[in-house]
Image (cartoon, rainbow, N blue to C red; front, side, top):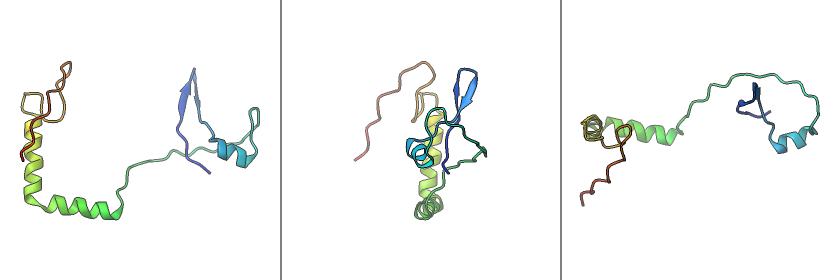
Length: 98
């Protein structure tokens, strides 16, 4: 069994079978197959050590205050900290304090 991504080809949706899986099943072009599709709900899951690190960061008031400050700067009208306004080039990086 393998997970695959549905893609569009012309007016059809297609699923490709990885080469190693096709070889394992003895499939080649023109082979007839029976499929059963189940939609996967794929969400990124952090490993437990990173979950703990994120919890620790979010418990740090100074860190959270810094995130809020960055969010305010991003909404501040000068193109923000993270991205340029639509149709404009990104501003040069701001100097980092030593």
